[in-house]
Length: 88
Image (cartoon, rainbow, N blue to C red; front, side, top):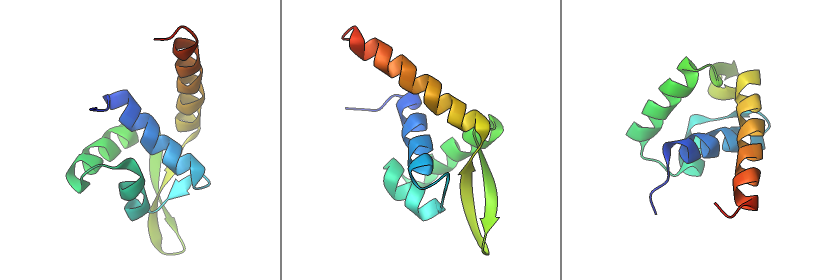
């Protein structure tokens, strides 16, 4: 089944959160289950929307969750819970 855009965004942000709030690009690629090209497109959008930022950690480029990204995860989890409660 094809994932909706919002589910892909959620999966990417959740993967970053599960790695302690920052992740290496290769790890995110594996966890998001996207092609490199599609992941780049999503990353650009997430950065534009200020849900993630690029950071340097010990000389390695990483993606880090912003406060807005954390809020998105919390709010989306509530919506998911609500819709599942109604069987939607």
